[in-house]
Amino acid sequence: MSRILVVYYSVSNGNTREIAHQMAEYIKADLAEIQTVPDVRLSLQLKCIWKKQYPLSNRKQ
Image (cartoon, rainbow, N blue to C red; front, side, top):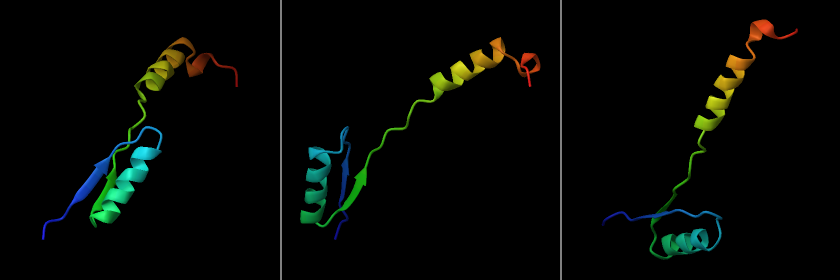
């Protein structure tokens, strides 16, 4: 017997998620959700710019 995996991606966790769960339950399959990873590049760039403009040695303690 082959194993079945239902993989889904839902932006708002609404209808797509519910349908995927129902499908997996109906066909007795495993279920996996694709999740996005937040893009941290912009925050790292801003952090580098901030440190360059305001180095620790110039800050008042």
